Length: 636
Image 1 (cartoon, rainbow, N blue to C red):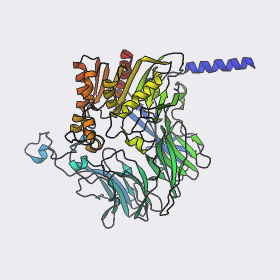
Image 2: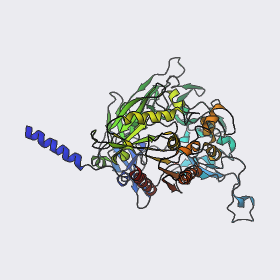
Image 3: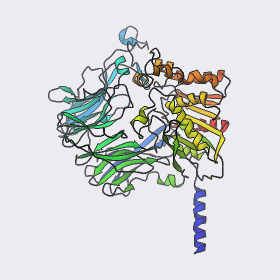
Image 4: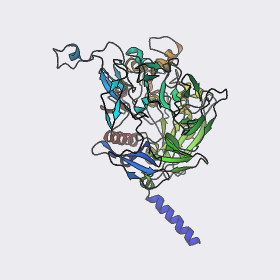
C-alpha cells in the first residue's frame, strides 16, 4: 500500500513538472469559443470556434453543433443552417437587415465637384470622429423587405433620410433591431441626436416601426439615459436594459419590462447591488435570466416578470463560485446553456440544471491545451481602505508558488473607470500569463467597480485621482506585508483609466514602485477634454469643461491631473499608444513619453498606428506582450 502511495505521489510530481507555463506564443494558440444559439428542434447547441492564424494576422472560424446533452461536436457546412434565423419575421414573410446610407456631405470633392482629387474633410459640428473612425456622412440604417422562397425584394429604409445610426455605432449589431412576435412591428435602438448634441448625450431610445403604416413610435421617450438590448418573449412583452441619467455612461443598469405595451416596470431597481450586464427571457416568458457583477465575479440571476402587481420582483442568484458567467445562449426546459470563464481558462459553454443548480461543461475546445499548462492560484483578500471600508482584492500567484521564495509583484489597475474586475480571461491583460512569468498580481476592486453597491460604483465620478489612488496603495501595501513579496521589486501596470492611474501614481507613489507601464492612459485631463469624442464621459466624470469653475473641475484639472505631477516622476515608465484611439487620443501617450524623456527618465514608447483603444490583431498583440515582459525584465 505504501509503495502504491509513493508511486502515486511521484506520478503527480512528474505530471506537475511536465506542465508548461503560459507564454504569449501559447496564449495565441488558444481557440476562442462563441455561442450562436440552439437548433430549431432544441437538441443541439451551435457555436463558432475562432483559431488564431498568427502568420496571416487573422482568425479562422468554423461552426459546430453539439448535443445539448453533451457528446462529440460536429462541424457544420458553410451553408448549413439549423438555428432559427431571427432576421426573418415570425410569419416568414419579411427579412430584416442593415446597410450604410450616405446622407451628409463631408468630403471636399462632394462640395466642389471640380476638385475630384481633393481628400479634404469639412465639419461644422462635433462627432466628427468616433472610437476609431472619422465621420464620412454614412449612417447605418435598418431595412426590411418581402421574403419568399429564400429570396428578398428591394429593401425599404425605415429611417429614410434620418441622419442617425441604427444599429448604434461603434458596437451595435443585430441585437439593436428585432421583430415583434406579431411580424408587423420592428423595434430598434437609436440615438436620434446629431453632431455636438450627439457627443454630449447618452440618450438612446427604443423605437417601434409599423411596417404596414410606416409610423414610428418612441417607446422610451420619458427616459433620458441609455435604453438598449430590446427582447420580446413569445407573448409580445418587451424587455430591455436601461440607465436613467443622460450623460452618465456608468449609471446603474436595470432590467425593464413593458406591460401591455404601455407600462414600464423596473425589475431590479430595488436591488442596490445589481447592475445588469445582459439578459434573456425564460422559455415560458414568466421570468428573465440575467448576469451581473457580484463581489468580483459575474454571476447568473433570475427575476420573475411581475406584471403590474404591487409585489417586489423576486431575484434569485443561480450560480456562485470563482468564475464569470459571460452570456446566456439558450434554454431547453430545465437546462440553461451559458458561457463561462475564469482567470485560468478561456470561455467554454456550460449547461446549468435549473432544478439542482449543477453545472456541467458542454464544450471542451481547449481542454487538451490547458491540461499541459500550469494553472495559477487565485485568492480573495479583503483589505481595509483609508476611509474605513473593506475592499476585495484578487491576488494571482505564479504556478508552483512557494511562499518561502520572494516574488516581484505587479499592481494591476483596471480600466473603465467603472468596469468590473472579475474572473475574466483576456487575450492581452491576462493574469495567468503575467503570473506565469513569475509575478504575483494584485488586482483591487477599487472604488468605481460595480458589484459592490451603487455608492461604491459612483464614488469614483468627479474624483478620479482621489480616494481611488488611496485604494490602490492600500491594496499593494497590504499584500506587500507578506514575506513572499519582494518589496524592492514592485511594478504598476494598467490601460485606459488604468493607464491614467499609472500616470497619477507615478507622481505620488513615494518610491513604492520600481517600474510602470501605461497603455492608452489619460496624461493631461485638459487636452483629453479638448480631443476625446464622447464628451458625455468627461462632462459627467470630470464635472464639466476645464473652463467651468466648480469644485470637481478644480480637482480634475488641478491636483488630479497627472501632468501636474510630472516634476515628481523618478521611475522608469513604458507608454503604449494606439494611433486610431480617438477615445484617449494620441497626444496623451506622446506627451507622457516626451515628458519622461526630457526629464531623463528611462522610458519607452510602443506606438501601434493601426490599433484603437485595444490591440485586436494577432501580431501586434504578440509585439505588445513581448515588449511588456521585456520591459519588466529590464526594469524589475
